Structure formats: structure tokens, C-alpha cells
Image (cartoon, rainbow, N blue to C red):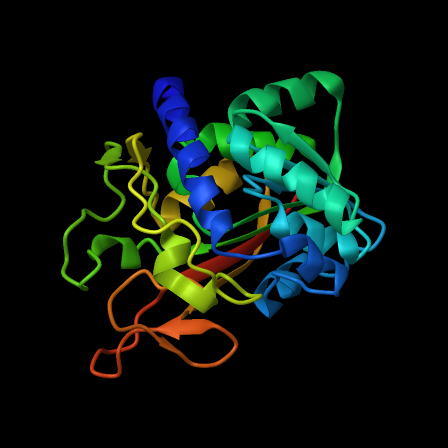
Length: 282
């Protein structure tokens, strides 16, 4: 584990989160009016969550957590960023949607949850999460340990194949590199994606954001993820790939097919841009 790099990423996320939320307007009003940030693919993986204890890993500023709570789940969201958790708690209070938000490094949170005997019917993680984790074995074992017997882990993530490209679609990075990739810092991907990620209407907010804190990414292959979950004792029930990215405009010339499903320019072939899996604890 690289707790030093996790800490560096915490600082980088604290800075970036302010910029991200500056583009999204009055989010509490959006939720009070019945808004949701969930996509059909996520609900297909999770199933009916009403009345279930649901753990949302790396929940960021809590928008998806509150969308799940509105569906009747008893939601606990965990994130390493102080800024994100502070925002999530305020958004919960101002929207009137109840959820619990806890700030912690995920690996430490798993240790504490084991000691306390905490269990959940569903565990959920989505979009740009595992690239911030230095050890997938620790991650997978943590998930298995906090699931109830018969509980389900639902996971949707950007496809690691797409991560070999730079923003102009040129091959630049190794596939699933063995060493962490140092970057200038978590960027303002909400500004880059516009209405794709600012679902209630994009606002200029912070302009020209430059993160003062570097970040470090761990880009895992699909086989790494699947094997880690199998080794942790979970049973893989479903694996699926998607030729689009929900909301995220990560590369030049991406087009919206409708429903904020972003695809490469028409001059390019279809590429896998997301994948999803569901796993169950026997």
C-alpha cells in the first residue's frame, strides 16, 4: 500500500472538488425538485435498493449517494476528501435527503468497519474510483468483509483500455502500468465535460483551474479487478463492456448519443469506454 500517495491524492482532491462543484449550480434545489444523478446502467447492476443498507465507496460529494437514498436505501458514503464529505453533508441537509457521510482513507475505513462488525446489503463504486487505490487486494477483501451473505457488489468504471490514450486519442500510457502514474493534479473534468456532468445546467464557476497539488494514479486492468474479487471469495455474476462513457468527455471530439452517453468522433471506430461487473458474497 502507498499511504503517502493516498495522502497526496487527498490534498489534490480537496482542491479539485471546489472547482467541480462550482459548475453545478444549486444542487440542493435540483434534488428537492426530484433530480437524480444515476444512470440506468447503475440501477441495473444494483437492483431494487429500497430498505437495504448500502455502502457507497469513494462517494465524492455525495450526489449519487443521495440519489440512491431517495430510492429508499440507507446509505453510507465514504471518501478520502475532506472537502467532498463536507459538501456531501451540507447537500444532504439542504436537500432533505438523509444519508451518512464518513471521511476516511478507504483502507483504514475497512479496518475500522471490520472491528465494528459493520455489514451492508449492497456495496457500490462508480467512475474513476480504483485508479486512486494502491492495492486491489486490500480493496476487494474489504468489500467482501463488509458484505452480508448474499450481498452484492456493483461496480462500473471507465475502461482501462481507454486510459492508454492522451486527450487527443494518441496512445500515450501503458495498459495497467505496474508503477503509479504521476500527474499534475486532479483536473477540472467537470469543466471539460460541461453538461455531461453538470446535469442541472453547466455554470462557469471556477475558470482556468490549476491544481496546486500533484496526484498519483494506479491504473488497473480488468483482469486485475476480477481476480482480486475472486481471491476475496466473491462470485462474479456479470461482466459487461460499453462503447460509451456516461457523462465524461475525456477526449477530443466526443459526441453525445443521447442520455449523456459520450462516444468518440464519427471518424473513429467504436472503443470500449466503460465496463461493469456485479459480484455476490456466497
